[in-house]
Image (cartoon, rainbow, N blue to C red; front, side, top):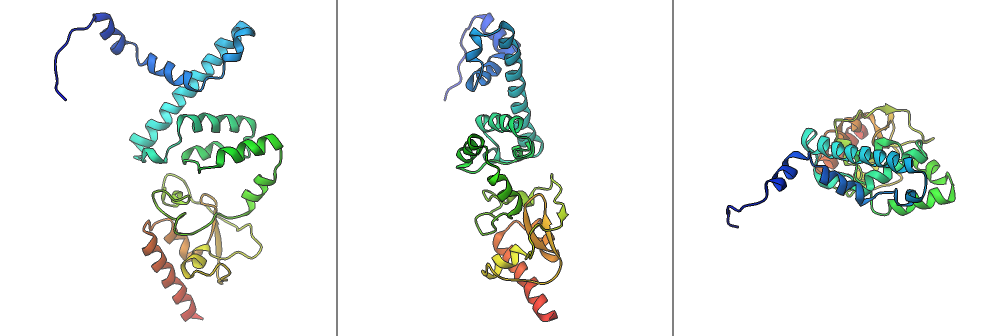
Length: 231
């Protein structure tokens, strides 16, 4: 690439530097606009929906700016423009099933279809299942970069320990570390309200501080050995 000087009309320079990125805002607004059908309706609908779409664009810009430049998150972990607007729409339809707190993470592949199916069918079975069943714990979900449980390392959210929802809970890190999905351990079992997993008292702190999966497994195995020796 070679830098070179060139002449351009002054009006072009004034537009690019004095319009406060109006053209970029219009481009984002027109990407997923939903006011095409209002042209034959009441005239003030177009004005109202234009304002709503501008608010959505500004909210998305603030969402990306806060995560990238204030909280220093990677762009790959953020929602796309389409996913952001869809989550806002789903929240307006059903605030309990789709809280805005889900905007903090990138959604998994396939979630879009399940959301649409649930809304069309009107069934609450998905909601009941997700509210009672803990998240899956394995090497993939515990990955600090791409895992579904990477939120465990996010200190911006309060990982509140609450009473487990299961009748006979067990520490999921114990089961993962020893490779036995039916392992039962004694002691106090807590449920992380943010990560949606059951943990024993000792593993609760390890899960939220150790990012490396192999090191986390070795520390959990130490906890298990200490428990066995104490018995």
